[in-house]
Image (cartoon, rainbow, N blue to C red; front, side, top):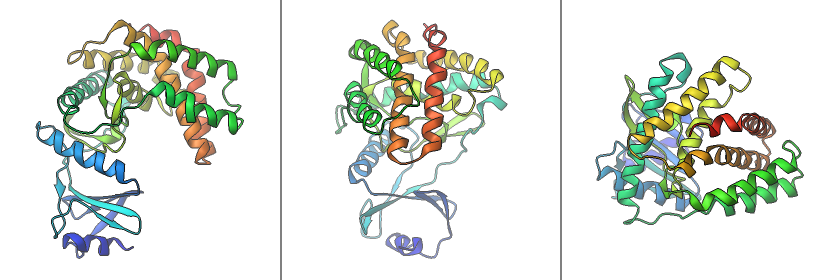
Length: 299
């Protein structure tokens, strides 16, 4: 369906629009239209936006249709409109004051986790057993697709370590897809969080590990940037600990959580028949494996 037809549900069919992501369009100067096919993810997103907004967390306000609905469903796709938050994504942390920015990222994640804790008891949250996810569809994909990019013994050792540590980790509602592209800043000050589709109960350090990996991606062959990345990782955790002190179990779990995240990405992209990002995730796994003791020294 043409986007202007979708926008007619908000009486905005005459507004200019431009696609900014495969699933999102900027509408005029003030709005963002998003689409997807997972109704559970949609409801999760909208519920969290409302709950966080009530705590004065900067999230995009939902714009109701002319009929007062939060979203519309057309041809098995949902669409919802939100106000456009001010600010920009930080695209390259290494070109600026990376130590200050990484510390800020840690504090920003900590503040979001604090807000999540206040609302998770009042809304439905998917409770994910991450160990079972890794030993379930992720492991099955490696076996069924005969993935050879990571040696079997390293996969087994990672899973064994995850089984040991995961039950000891503090769990709560997390973003689950936190990276610079899902945060907006103006003059290095946070102006908004976006995209809560994947939010779930999980180990809280998953978000820290995910953010750290997003800052490492594409740089494992650059010795200058990888040296900076270890500093970034430390400052990220320090910023987070100004809000939530980490346990020793959590600090020591950083390597295995990061390794398992890259396992997940290899499996995910393999299932999507995307060979290049699957290979990149496997290379990230191998780099992390070689440097796992340095990551563990975070503690």
